[in-house]
Length: 215
Ligand code: HSX
Ligand code: HSX
Image (cartoon, rainbow, N blue to C red; front, top):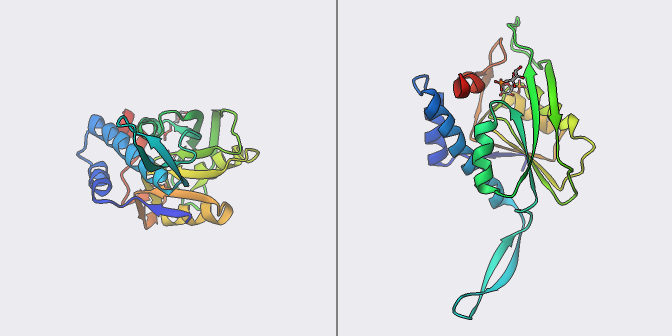
């Protein structure tokens, strides 16, 4: 299951507002937070569960489940656009440890849609990732996939149980490129757009998520 589309009506409703050029900065940021929460819940819903029994206040036993690994999450914030998304993910995984990567694509206009873009990493720091951890790399946009591939490369020595990408909008090309190199990475995204333009932007897309969220 490398690609998982979070295409519930509510997630699509929020994405539509994000795409709308008339959506202002405050609503844009709030919507990224809301989607972070929804994507987080979808990720949690795919995690392994075990049956447990608890005692209720009525001194009666009740059977239920526990999601294994809910407490073992590491969220990687790909600055800066991912920050509101991470805020939402933390609602689903309140005890997550966090890593950060400050990454910047070398922007420019190319003759044709770029197949990859150079990505400068200005800083990164990850917590100690253990075998039982679930790593969620958060970046609202996956265009050429270059940024996520770079982050996965930075994390190559880590041996987590599972790796996820939490994104809002991805391109078909970017998803294929990541899953080809890292078939075990599960990409959660609300929508997959068909095109990348000659500047490496997803089309129809939503513009530059970092600029729209932060100005
Ligand atoms: C934007 O470009 C996003 O926030 C991502 O960090 C990046 C995605 O592009 P790509 O590396 O997938 O082409 O700044
Ligand atoms: C700048 O670009 C700084 O390193 C920021 O952290 C980064 C922001 O990229 P984006 O997420 O706004 O695209 O060089």
